[in-house]
Image (cartoon, rainbow, N blue to C red; front, top):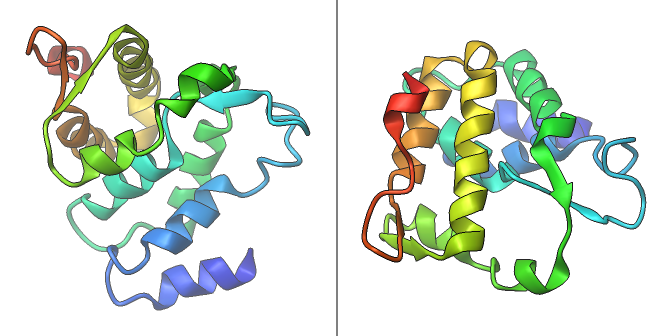
Length: 158
């Protein structure tokens, strides 16, 4: 873990630090009581999504203490769901597609996941801070349902 913390601190920009961010945010998951060996759970708010939000936050790179606090929130029991392998197979690439800036259309399962992500943001907005919330909302704003409506209701984040 120390090498990722050093890589993050030594990166010249938040964007350059994204790989290190993902490792820092994932720290301790494999040994966590929340995600036991066997990986029979998945998280609602994705680490890659959190790392991307951090990269888009205004101002200087957040401190390692702030990242540790976000990692702790991501590991919380309210960010986990049973892993349903067949459904998750369809998820491959959807986070990456969102991060390209493309508009993403989602069906019921993914719409539900985005709803859970928004609920998680609302539940933790006091701890995450306005910069993280705004950056995450900007990313989730690219997701639309099958009828062409935005999935995220930003009013819930106010």
